[in-house]
Image (cartoon, rainbow, N blue to C red; front, side):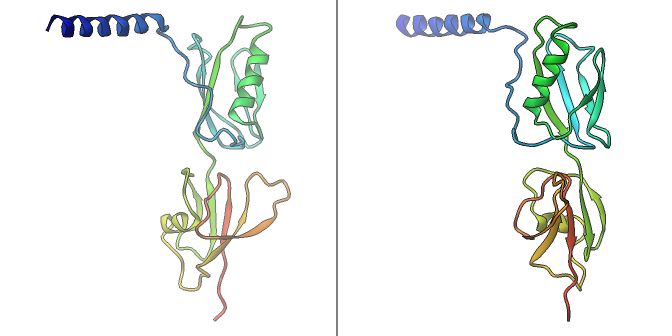
Length: 186
């Protein structure tokens, strides 16, 4: 019994030591869920600058993919990943404003996707990761009776060519997609 008590107290002591060894203000990991996602117009990002609450906050990118931050002004985030934006902010704050800035960025809200064509409700809808084209159409009230229901035409939001591509309804929606459901011929 004494050995069990000694073992338990040793475990509690070592757990207590490891808790003391770790700093109270630990930064979250720098990888986001979708590290390859490129920021664009109307995205919202949460920026946490370690120990700088007045600089931290939520920022929405404007129509050009830009936003403004205290001290450094306009920041062009269009086409950058969260990691690339972190590096850009570190480089802008480090020389003149912060000694060793530690910055973490999360995408708060992705830009919406758009539905048009033969769907019950047309317009902009909030993007959700993992959403398929079929689920997106269901969220909009479903197909009209004239719709081709086995594929969609899509213009990717980040495609500079704005080329329309034909995709299966089982593929995943990307933020900023413009989705057109074609009319079938009788």
